[in-house]
Length: 242
Picture 1 (cartoon, helix red, strand yellow):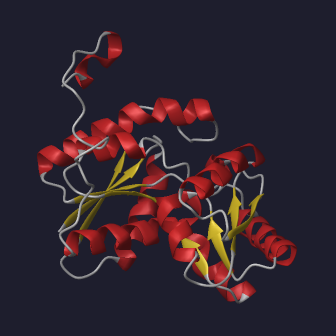
Picture 2 (picture 1 turned 180 degrees about the horizontal axis):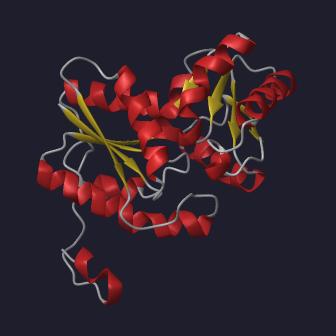
């Protein structure tokens, strides 16, 4: 099977990290291809960024459909464009926040999320509510490191680990979720240091998609996730007409 992991931002170095983490958990016979969005922001840290990332995501999914991809991972913790991608993909599409929260809910009575900037906390809470995870999510905390500084700041790993420690003490949680695809490679380190399970959404989403494909399952298309009505788009979105 072939899984396409879409990085919704345009930072190629982050795509490399995301791809490595996804391939590390993929089973034999599963080909993971990580792709960088061709259009959009270099990082997603606002509703504005998220909205402008969606055309690039949909373009990547369209290319994946033409190339025969079996399923997709949306590798941004805001799960941007998830519903739209499900309308146009033949195979399953899973967001990393969605997969991470569901996975963490299996590991104890409650989990804490540690994300990047404080301004993104509301989005994480909103997704926890949407996914039915509000009763498991005990807190959403920010380390206040911008996304693009995750691999530039030499102290980033230490700051994130301490934010995770504080979250555990404050919330009394059994598990942690790292709330950014750019943190995917830190899970093992944080888990070793703090002695709790730490969920990486990239790995969780990759394995979820792999499982769905193995079971022959995809998004139901009888209702709102049916293929979008055919219509012509105008302006710079003209190529998205169907």
